[in-house]
Length: 271
Image 1 (cartoon, rainbow, N blue to C red):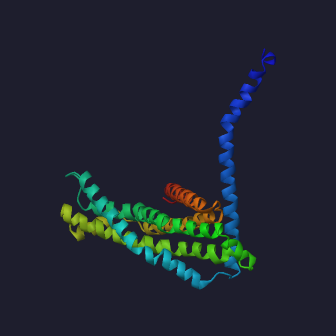
Image 2: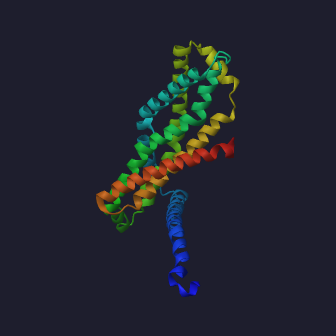
Image 3: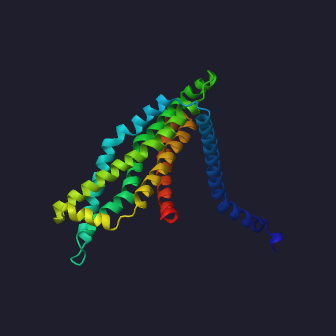
């Protein structure tokens, strides 16, 4: 019967095309980005192994990513510690010892709030800046000019930023952890009357020696992912000023999503 009805013969292939076409486009986009990032990282690795990366540029990028980000990181971490302490105090009942608040604040800040919030701050402050900067250089043909004079943009622009991110973010997370814990401790004293000695007693009671290393490992992963994605998106920018804006927006979205995915992968892998 279908042989007498050509429309029925094409109905199933058309339905499959409607379903599979978006999947194919997504798979193609993912494979394209993965391939370009792999080539970028291979070039960065070669630049490091052949000692073709400027130490002065690395220090400059550490200053831009790290030192200049300390104020906003301290504010973010302090607010995270304050909110964690206040929410914990709201949830506590008379049957829970107050000193447990020390563990709640410390573990929350060190394991989760410190690394993730610091990374999110760096996405907006550093990642977007890198994408916009390199994207502007790309659309204005400054990248092509570097190639024309025999200079490698990867060793000049990409490698120093990636290494600086790996170095700077763990340092920022360490500052965020300390400041968040201190802010939570002070808030617990003001709102709950919890003494500093009781707070530290609770923090030590449930502390694991692995927790700090876990936090720093997470920050290293974030510090690698943020500049890598930002550089990749910047170097593939096209379409003038509108293209720079679109690519920066997509870069922020990809970096934020990557941070959340990495954060979700860490507990089953390391805890």
